[in-house]
Image 1: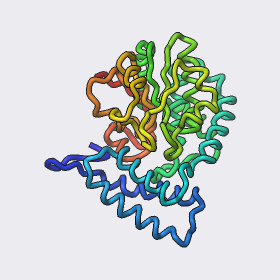
Image 2: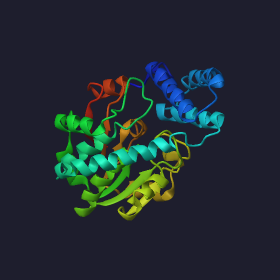
Image 3: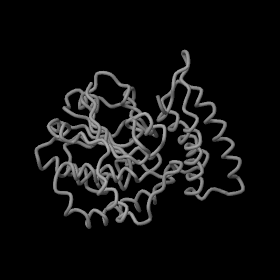
Image 4: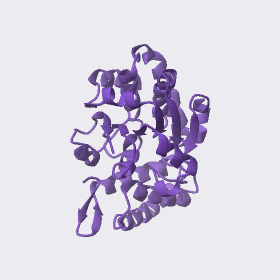
Length: 295
């Protein structure tokens, strides 16, 4: 099972994840305008930490989170992606203005939301197009590789919606607006603290999402990439207990939720941006999915 597999009683992480983590470290150093003379030193620290973390029984999001927490301390920068996150939202807002006429129903809005999941920086061999409008047009025509939207829609009564990236969250907002207009109650969940280009409370409020959803909550996990049930607030746990559907955006949320037992049905809306996740899902890298999994 990617991105880790089992050998005896030990969890061994997919070695391809090592290069991806280092790729993100390199980007964080660049975004933080860190002293280039000291770059090799911090890369060496990161390399040593990754090798240690890959010996732990932690999930990949937990490993990545521990690495990025250390990076932000070393860089003395708690949000190196801050400017990039705002720029991503601005690009998405302009693209959404142009394509909104085509987003007439649930399936079309889901496709747009999954295309938005491509706003993910530093993933090895994954690049974001400089012409996102042309890229959107191309991907919209391709549609979804896995399309469970007909099965997902009837479950959209009480929704807990786990967001992923900035830029992407603009397309999530369009989908959420449609859901609310059609009677859904949405509890929107963003990251507790800045990590990578993931959306936080600040980002959601800047877009006005706090005025559109029933409740706006955080994961409660601090600087954590993914979902941690052991760190959730009572409000979020209660929302999960009574919801009819979880919408999970992106790969980190997928990796966090896929092994959990006793959950409501989960709609995984994501682009498979790396080979380990694509292989696990049985699709090609770059495939777009609206995948429903029932408990």
